[in-house]
Length: 337
Image 1 (cartoon, rainbow, N blue to C red):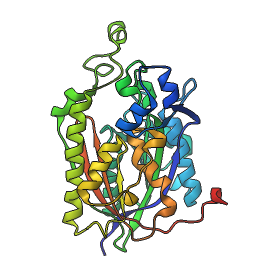
Image 2 (cartoon, rainbow, N blue to C red):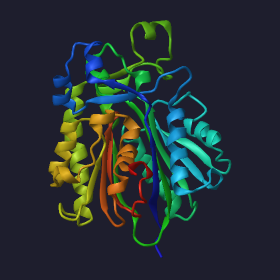
Image 3 (cartoon, rainbow, N blue to C red):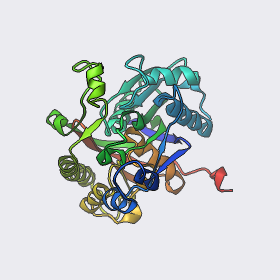
Image 4 (cartoon, rainbow, N blue to C red):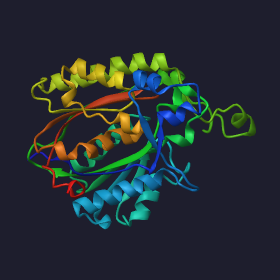
């Protein structure tokens, strides 16, 4: 009997501090109306404090996941952390998370594919399940984007926020879980979206710091055009290949980069806004955190057997889509009581 990798639980975490559009108006030449009309973002959460790295959010998200599913950290076989903002060059942020939660049995590693990283990590983690190698795989998507954002650059500082989400993958033989994938990359996109310094090509120096080269650099028009076409096309391709229509797709789970890109993807797939997971207005673009944060926010609305199309696009360029059949009905939300 074919084994598939099914999501059996989700967890999430966002920092307490909320950076609103109104506060950004005091920092750069922008307005709430300008930000909303171009991105759909109202606010984003920012991780404050000394020695507070991406792992802090990842740890909180995984601990919530384990508490909800009743799984012991010592039972985790593998932990993958998708992140663009690791705590350190090494060790991997996944190692730091594993140690903090007591996942003593797990091996762990980071995955870096910009905003597509969580989707890549989900596909990678699923292979260990479907081959029968492992029984419990945790995939984390976490980023402290505020650590690489120039808050004097209005083109980028309005977009990004900090946050983390995590999912548990377990074997399934009912035809649920990850059923199809289409993943792509094109390194020619580097020139349009990258961080100029901080790696081995241009290590940190007084010169790179003075030139403000340790922040996100983006040519918005080029990135927008490429993202709209490729993210929308690949989502439609995966849906069509699996015989899914606007009626049989229950949810589109798009990377939360820009409301206009999300709308274009939904239109290409042919579904209405009522079937699109959307929380960009609350969190902005949390890079690897966007998709798991969506799953966590919408968990109470998901039902066993729901057809989900996940789609993402990231710097590099990276993009792709997954077809996932949801594996469980929600348990009552204690916070709603």
